[in-house]
Length: 454
Image (cartoon, rainbow, N blue to C red; front, side):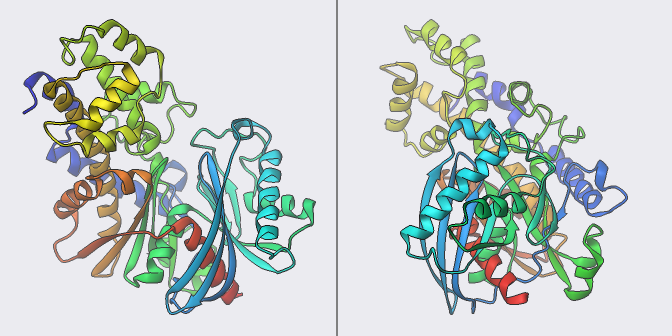
């Protein structure tokens, strides 16, 4: 049992029923504003049309390339679709060097094109025509299926010369500059769209795609008449379109101020995109570990944890001087730990802070801190998912999910489901399925569907 002191410290992270309902209401209002042309500019959740209008049937066949850029690594994949909902995937991960994350955009895309050329040569496909689906997991205004303007960099990227530019064209130009592979960029998508497509390939009831990883975002299938930003020519051809919610930016207009804590404000103050992506900063893997570090530092300074530790001053100094020392993966490991051994917790505390002995009581306290931060994140994600499900006309809705936080945290799925049971309309039936490589296989499926419809 965790003592009253720690419970009081963590109370700001525990959302009341009123707060949950209020966030839900504000989120639904904001997405409605994002869909309408007259209010789109004021909306924090931009609800961009993706121009992906056909979901996969499972019968797609052929070889397709997929490129997945959304963090400090990117992947290149060769996906062979075999029909009958079957596919094989060969892939390779390439790092994005730190200097390229902040250097000129042209250099970033030249690096990607070089890796693409090496990959297709390695697989003896350098003479073949290969349609490519490009998963670009940053906020974009989609102008067509293969045209998207980057609105802002996130996740530590800040390459000049890319914001406001068509990233599909920048990749195409980089491939053409090399001239050593016949690769055609046929579709540009967000990782959430890839997740939805990958899950829809296996389950035709999938209508929502969600990523909770380095970043946090969602997309869903909307009726075209509700998407006022969609080009009228597209409205005539199909009845639906996938909408990229860009919910990471929810709260930028102050809608989350009543639930944000001092720790959230500190995380935001020290970020490279201050006052932006506020919902993402409360839910994604890039920030959850840092929130725990700040809480742990406050608890130590107020003598609420590790009270008998002989190295407290050194412990505090390590926490103060090492931003990001506590990683989100540590939250998952600590929450999975078992009482009273706390093997992982004790190992983490020793590795990070040099503490040889941690009491059962202190391990319980640290676990509770991690639980509160993770549960709040899952609650906020569940609020967003529920808002999307409740506006979809289908009675049964499957949610495709992916991302390191969702995959690796032992209780994140159960936290989400627990809140969704309270918020999803009683006449709806929902389920969550784990995506099988949405940003890879999903991108290839978008490329396949795009190639089929042209």
